[in-house]
Length: 79
Length: 446
Image (cartoon, rainbow over all chains, first blue to last red; front, side, top):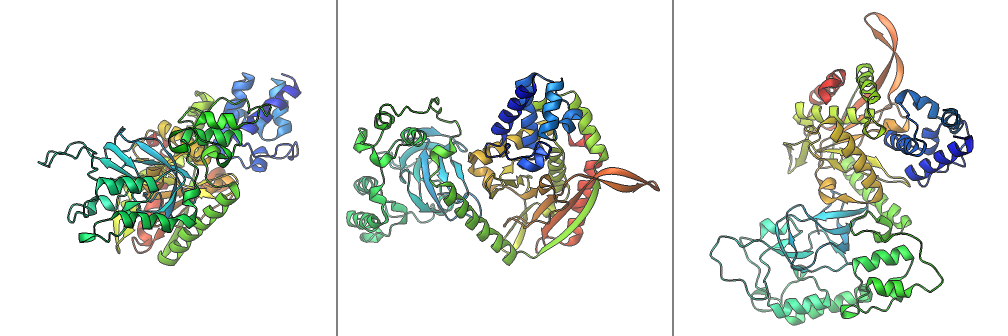
């Protein structure tokens, strides 16, 4: 998965979980959950959609890698 | 019009999901009602057959108004055979009226009067008769209809629910559509015809009848919704602080065993089946309420009425502002996995505006998990007539002394706001202790 594909998957997942959230207005290294006001259920849904989209197994131990947009792209593209 | 929450005093019928002749069972969703806070699926209080829908789509009426007539299945009593018109035997959707009826039957209303009232869209339940023995006359009904005209009731466009939904989807104003249905009512085909050619309709599949489609049904604009919800919350919370002498207790709970148990369990599960800490907190809060029943129930008529079941209300903040507190029924009895899926479902439906009436009225105790938004602790305001509100802060790593050594452990600050009329601080303390004990034995939360 290229970084662009990873970014696209993340954007889609955010759009579905929090349609009114402004991902574009968020710094790449800002915390996604705080910045987009995702609660734990939103975040779980976010992971669920990313798993569906990328086919990648994401365990709870991987969650820290998904804390920011930059780290999430790196994680998804790196796998 | 049922009271769908302690803060509701009027409601608007957005949609009827039944029609005369339909057989319904107690608990079936029969209408969608718009309240200050949200559009809510209203359930029938009784089993029977729909005789007549009295309040039309788009009408706003006070709580207690009769919405529909439902006849109960033939009772064993030796009654005269029902008149051919299917005279309704009992009023539905107004709990206050049901038990009140048997003692003093209202003067009979002739089918002709009833028919005229239906034509004019007049609600007979609210009318005082001027005829013999207080009986309603044709003139009473017509006067009532005339009184309502200036309120714009006559200008209401008649349309089927499906037409309304399609109109909202396509951005068509119903007022601009010529109806070809019975009585000039607007049907789906009329709406589709009204879309100018070339202005292609959005390439969306038509929404199936029971799919959540809040925007399509919402009678209020987002700005109006925000304002009316704010007012509803204001009224209820002001009442709470005016009437309820709150007392507060708090306790810091070690979450080490609960979280490691959860992570271990989640490791083997697909994302969709994983638990979040909130589910553990919810189950523990419900079980603790069963162990300490003094915080679970209602303060009514100057006394505490403990509730038998634990229906745990969950404070859910809505994107764009506002708050709903639907209940998870029998939360203490539900297996953790079901509680988790129930919580997910409830949050989705609360935000999509598809909650059921019973979910908004049945809570016996409420929980807020504001820790999700990063605060360390939250001391809540009780939802009357409930008597307690449990609060959870954010789970954070803190230095903790264990066995004479300092270690870093995840902890959560639990709080309880309780009604001092119903219980004393001692009860509140016992509740938080029970909560903490339960969180130390996560295996028992299953």
